Image (cartoon, rainbow, N blue to C red; front, side, top):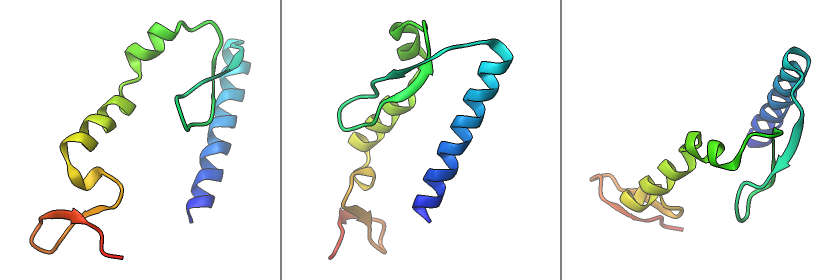
Length: 88
């Protein structure tokens, strides 16, 4: 199921980029997304500072992972709602 969702997401991004290119004439460039992440296609000539200003999702996820142990890989809540490592 995950592979199908990823494929559908990639198709959506490609169709959206194509529409943006035809409608507005934008150009695209690969942009680094951080360590251990694949590059992403971004509109050319958008300054990195502007991208950072509007790209808060990754930072919000990191804050939540630090705040909530359940958000960390390998942890879940038990029946009483207590966080702990997953049993293998």
